[in-house]
Length: 248
Length: 248
Image 1 (cartoon, each protein chain N blue to C red):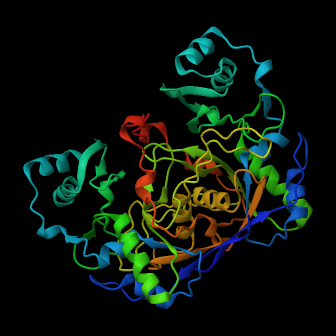
Image 2 (tube, rainbow over the protein chains, first blue to last red):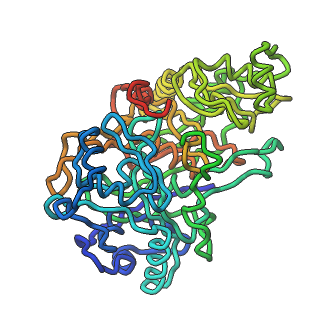
Image 3 (cartoon, rainbow over the protein chains, first blue to last red):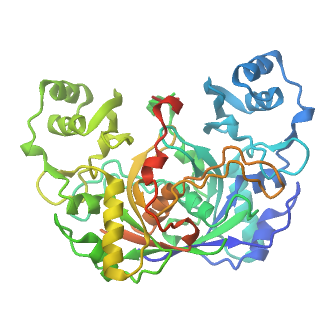
């Protein structure tokens, strides 16, 4: 238990497909062992060329109908359907989908803010845990340290207004600090205590930038106890299994 | 955009009903203008005497039946019913309720870990926004600065495993950073961007303690842009109105 810090990584260029994002971060930040590097989904999607132009999408009849019902752009609805395995809610102008990667969020994570190009949008990385592993390897190659890496995006939540940044990918981090079986300081058992460490780090990193600043990465320092030598289970470990979920 | 820090407040005594928590925090922490003080719900509940002993609760027939169905303690179920206005889910051993304060969470926020006394539990503060305002005033009286105050608890989430710390009360803070109408750095409009600042600060503070450490408060420094002179709308502003919620 001691101080923790979130330090924005500044001075990165506007990112293009194929850019070596891990190397760029390693060059711009003074990384230390035990750091966590939280990288915004949008930056990862850009370098992974997960960008689409709505004008180049041909909506199917189903997408056109859903778009009419929800008052949304048919091309956007088509991309959402393409990126999803199922729709959780489609009403009142809101489309909440389970993505092919297993995340449940509005619009399958497709986003149009801060994407250069006429009617351009980003899709989520195809496998953000794999993205995090690649970034970690790239950073290790360039900086001789092996920080944990989180790829994060902001999701809305049932019951609460506003968005919270969550981890959609990670490598080298215990995403869940599972206390079951351990005891509290009075000796009582902590049955279901398991803070979602990766999500809370993502939220902390989000506070260190702002939505207009274009800072794609934030270093979080002081949480070395959650950083692991192995890449570990990734953010996949944060997906609640369908059979254990009361809200789909 | 610059560095932010979370600093645990150490050296507080085991708290008792009536203890001047704000004064104790002010005495133990070197507070600065623009700080946010995140206080754990359990600490607030203890000083507000929101503690019950399960042995002293007389369960009604309804509580006993629900307890049998869910394999829970009948006295605990009675307290959950007493603290709730409605049940959102009651199945598979899980009881998710809307509390009288308007929060939706497991067991109406009733918790038994780190509560001294045989079969003792804490209830949520009756009005955690009022708790935050009182703590802010107490701190101001003792320390001559007027930090923002958050009262936080850890809630489970649909779809994602683990808990995230969220704000159930706040004072002197913009809980939601609403960007609607503002523009991204490429000139695009940010329609529904509104990070839940208070929740993300709560999560950040949670990372700076651990579940066994007994640290009841954490100072978050570097977010003065969200700290306000007025107490403001409180965490009530984070409650999604029922008519706008697709999950109840």
